[in-house]
Length: 519
Image (tube, rainbow, N blue to C red; front, side):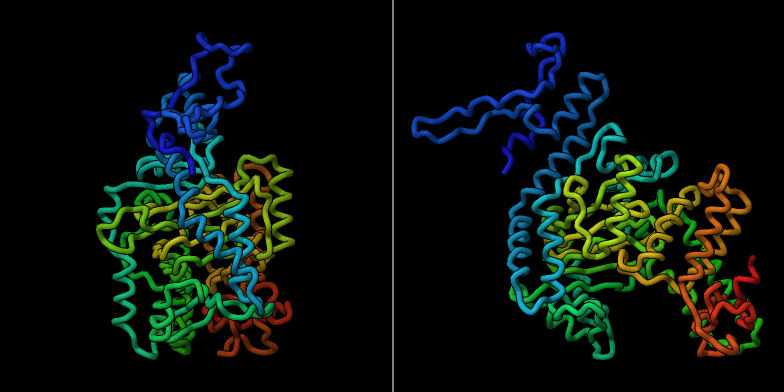
């Protein structure tokens, strides 16, 4: 454990200024051997009353800020200390032991398959640190006003930890306990919930997700020891409005617009076919909204493999309290990710090639692994293309969603194409509305490429290549005759056919169109 003085800004000993430094080269940051620790008459060491900045990298940045006349932001200092504190939390160390023990189980389960991921993160990763200097920061930190500045003027490639009590007070209130009560109140046998069953025996051709009756979920949830791997309740419907941080709602509405376009396209085709399509099928054309707003409830110990969100969104998640009145850190989640924004282009490419080759067996270079700790009330905003692996230290309910920003369309498209070509690098299916969304993006891009992040020569060519590739892979029907029938997957999903549909034949009678109709 780090010395308690580390968490008390008043106890920090700052290095001498350059004018009074006694080091030979005049630098206050010369590496020095740590001073001998004083001992008591019994021979036991006694902790120092203060901590030397040079001995703790998380404090050196703030000492550097002083010597360079940069203002010190006490908020950032406290957040960095908190990240270090949570990294040494007894609950985190206990989870590491659980991961190590789980690897010994036989036959291999999904949990024992994932446990090495968690063990590597907790053994070799490092707590993420923020900084007044954006390029040096593992993540950014601030309130909604700070987030808006970053969304409007930033480079779009940093994770952002949002803490804003004023905004939290405007959100719909929910806790883990009330979520369980709602599940119990709806405990009808016909109600099904998607659950990650980590105790299942591992199968290469299957995943761990099953749809279980709600009564069975509640029964299994009551098991509170490590004799059985944890449950992770996925894709719980989130009907509350107001869970989106207002800077994202204000400036990142591209995905909302695309979903509305997809719905209107499906509706117009419905009328064009004189009522042949049912309204039930029409509703399927907006299932993109299920990933735009979601909530996930995981038991302590739940973990995901390294993955990337499939359609290249900005993902935001807010960690909810488990009980009203409890301190924020009674709930703890670790968000591991691979930091690449500071790497040279060739090293970033190597990371992506390794990820592409290894997929969900990816073991990143430990030097690139950062871990952000989240407590109740924290909101994390993650940029497109981030490789991440969340770890649930306590029972955690988080609500969130996905958004896209027009000026960052290129970043989103690049990440979307990577996931489209490498299905082993994401844990999500392509949405059925992919082609409608892509066609909407295409219309915007043709009107103003620079506003969509495609300024410069070759931007339109690059987009067209990505557009055609993603659309072609998103949904492929194998119709040998008419595509105007319910056995056509594109027709049933109220989507146009793509360039790989029905054997590549250009002849298509899908009422929603085909690629030839939009070229």
